[in-house]
View 1 (cartoon, rainbow, N blue to C red):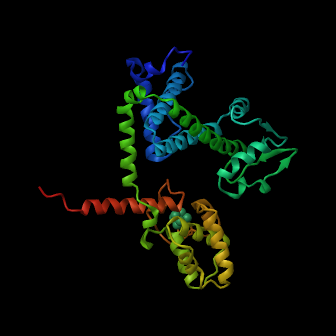
View 2: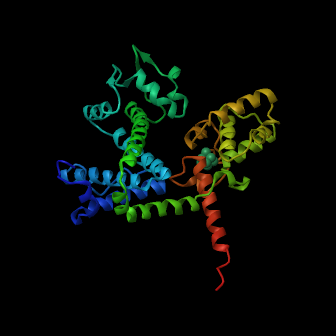
View 3: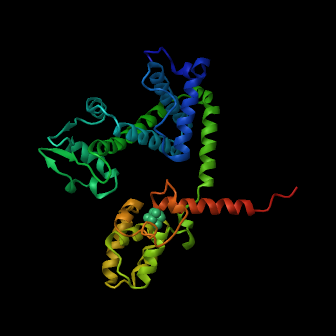
Length: 346
Ligand code: SF4
């Protein structure tokens, strides 16, 4: 802002900054519609002009979010922007540049002899409770003299793991900073932003009404993996640990009770009411996220990848999580119902 001599007032209505406002709207819409911001942009961020547009559009989007005083919009925008940083930073090719960025969010970072990034234990302890998955539990991480090693995991290298950690810190800081800005925002400025805010909040509301709750999922909407596991359990086929945890966590996400989830397991060959209850309670209380398709496939829980079942949805390029399957099924049902609804009479 200072370098380019652009004030907040100028950003709101100066004509030559329209390109910045347009880019900011795109960033906002992306975060509202997909909760994620596409890391690609037509703006070349390697030029001073591109960098200026990116910086100012980020600021304009932030100011719009603050002027909305809408916590849902704030949460979605912060998630989108932090995800964007996660994607971009995970692929930075110069370790020195990545280190400089990481150091602005952590008290320190360093690389060990194996080329893995390490972070101070206090930073890790502060951030990791907000990230799900056993990788992020301190007892599962190597620690050397107060430094936690972020070793590669699954398909992610150490830099991508550290970017994931940084995403959480960025998200928290964005939310904190926006709340502080909201406190300082005066009525006159909020009024000037009313049109901009109205557009994005309207989109958010439209998005919320067209999103269908998972809790209305009927059995016909369940992904083939979930259908197969429940059928096999009913037939007393032994299901492996990954499949059981997946079924328990899916049950929670689609709004079943612990009792209803327990009913799936009563015919399991090793069924014990107390043990099952204990394990289900654990999954529900800790809000486990269901495993994604790659994990289910590796653990023989995906009938589509084994060729036992055909599914158009599961064959799509973007299909990497059973919740996406559920969401896609519900969206198409929702659309069909809307098309069938009688047109309003005159
Ligand atoms: S592709 Fe994914 S959603 Fe479909 S059955 Fe396999 S694991 Fe389930």
